[in-house]
Amino acid sequence: MSAVRIARISEEPIRLAEHVDAIDDPRMGAETSFVGRVRDHDPDAAGAVTALEYTAHPDAQTALSAIAARAAEAHGAIVAVSHRIGRLEVGDAAVVIAVAAAHRGEAFAACRDIIEDIKRELPVWKRQLEADGTAAWKGLGG
Image (cartoon, rainbow, N blue to C red; front, top):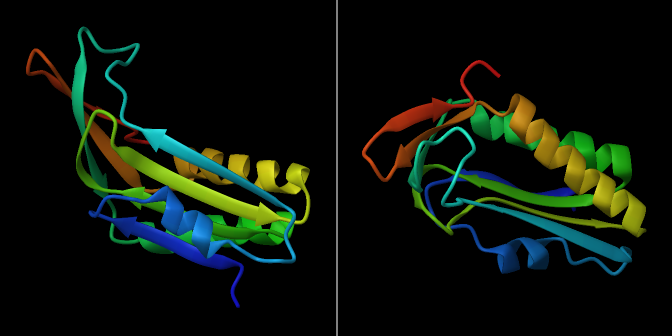
């Protein structure tokens, strides 16, 4: 069975339980997870954030798979990761990562590597919508 159980770009809501179930393996003694949610504020926003609209490059799924595979190999881990696209409201999960590894150090390291590489490398951009009707693109250009 592959070390990357899920690597998905999706317009559908992301469920943490599905990701945790996907990494279940009796050889692994540690599991970690990360859920990145849309929040109602941003340091650069003049007012409240009401929603985010995520857009993905056609190669985003391939890039996410590569990020997951790299972390799985580096840390001897099993990975399930999804990034949502489309319009997300405050509180919606934008990114879900679940990792299983033999020990906690490897599980935490793999999870952190995945989210940091997503932020740096994944060709997904977001348009931040604010309560006053303004909008700003975030993440363009790296």
